[in-house]
Image (cartoon, rainbow over all chains, first blue to last red):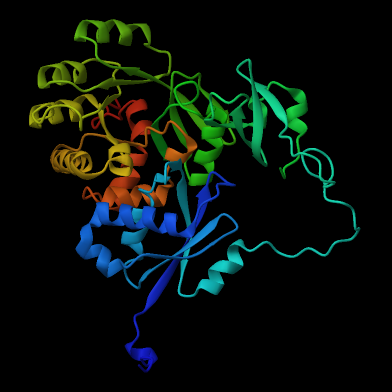
Length: 187
Length: 214
């Protein structure tokens, strides 16, 4: 079967969305099902068939979703109703829409910074010397929490212990432990 | 004009601190939020207004709660119930927002209540959480009720507020998403802009249409 000439091919658009909370591990297929389910639930089968949503990339905490040209608005509304992916609570924040995947990749790919010194990379525990990864602790509302994610002023924590595994979303100012306010931005 | 999310629930009701919700709101394009049972303040450039939610109580208790919170600067909201209750609440001085219309019965908010809301400048809240999180019949019902509210709003021009009722930063949506979701209930961009500024408009005293100058 020969490939169709460009004028007869379907025109696509790509939507870039950031996955929140940061650091959530998802599979591309599961995310596709979540988006497809949200689209079908909101617009019905007929419109979803026109939109034809597809997850084409899932990298660096971002997802690139493909749709047919002219249906970006419908897809964006449907994407804003995605609240979970296989029992994991998530939220998709739409950043941009484009005609090519590559132009969207430029937006989220980390820029390469030339290393000046060849220092060992520091982690939460110290150095990458095969030590067990220990999350830093902090306290909030008279409870002890483990810091999962720290980005600028935003700190995501989880209560210490195995009973309560709900993530709390705090800021550095909320933390009562002074040491926690000096934790590294990269955990 | 301040773009406001008319209801968020910080920790301990929700799983995010009020500071984090404010930071997130700033990133999503909001100027202010109404945080339930939280002192007011400003965090990260976002004004946090204190909100009081009155629900499941008779009118007598609503009156006393409103009296207690008078001049406190809090945004006072009352959960809608039947038609008589709603009319009584809308008539009360000090009530700012009537919420939960989508959960009240079909005749809870009629043209008389709409006229009263317009006269007393009581806003009707559009809670976006049933549209975001609801599926199937629950969402369909909410969209239908909101479309009905919008018909009354076009006729009587009472204030509208928009809220995500976010209990987490994951429940919050940016202004563009909110405009998209509101298009499902027949709101165009000027309607959404007016609704996002609804909290500010109900808190500021109305300018009299006739002013005596001598």
